Amino acid sequence: MRVVCLGECMMELVHEPAGGVRLGFGGDTLNTAIYLRRLGVKTAYASALGADDPYSEELAAAWALEGLGLDFVARLPDRLPGLYSIRTDENGERSFYYWRSESAATQLFSAPNIDQILNDIAEADLLYLSGISLSIFDEAAHRRLADLASTVRAKGGQVAFDTNYRQRGWQDAAAARRTVNMLLPHVSIALPTFEDEQALFGDREPAETLDRLHAAGCGERVVKLGSAGCWIASDGDPVHVSAPNPLQPIDTTGAGDAFNAGYLAARLGGLTQHQAAKQGHRLAAAVIMQRGAIIPRELMPPLSEPAAC
Image (tube, helix red, strand yellow):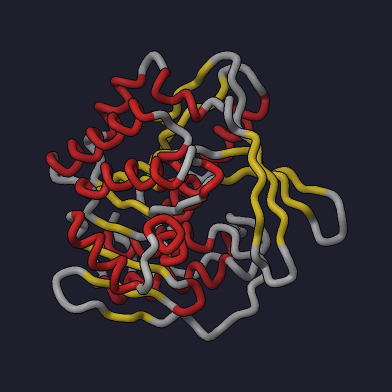
């Protein structure tokens, strides 16, 4: 099995409760990629970094240390990684502030070797994308991503997608809807959070989201509800899967990304949708009890069953 997660990783400034900031790194698809690899799934990351700055070198070294494949990371001269800041309130909810308009990752589709990168990614068993991935690219890149997703499916692979809608990343909501709707017909596993679907499509309840995704062509659907669990659906009627006992989160950063990794690792390992959702909840619950999107490796909960990947 081989998974390719495509998107952007940025330098991360985390405001500490006692004052000051801590420099780290993160990004939604990168978070999922790291957790997939820790759960035993062979995973590569596709993005772009600078070619001649220490921050890009540190990011690449950190990804390699996690065991991620870096063959699909373009290196661009005179570009830097993006930067974002996280502030977390007393309930563990976070606010993000971005400096990324000129980041290396936004120029991925201008890389000299992008055609070869996309041709190689097309051989993946599973391609993972998110709405945040889409938001950093222009319309021409969106079309190339839709074509890539179509090719992956045509070659027998799967495409997983989390809408992960963040208003600040888009020109407007209409542009986001057009882009998401262009990709959805090529998606085999949809993993949105209901709150995002409400904001972007005006869905009134999870059933409406499940039906809309099914009509778009997504066969396997998971609608995440945070502490309220999730709804899953494929061939039969939707089923609600509860989350672990309620927790008082320390930091919810990366919870959805972790759920997606736990879910996909379990599915790739042959577990049922219901078992996979439980695994996703288990990993997300561990993540929200630590600060930052990536928890220490020793705090990773085990898979319900070994992933055969």
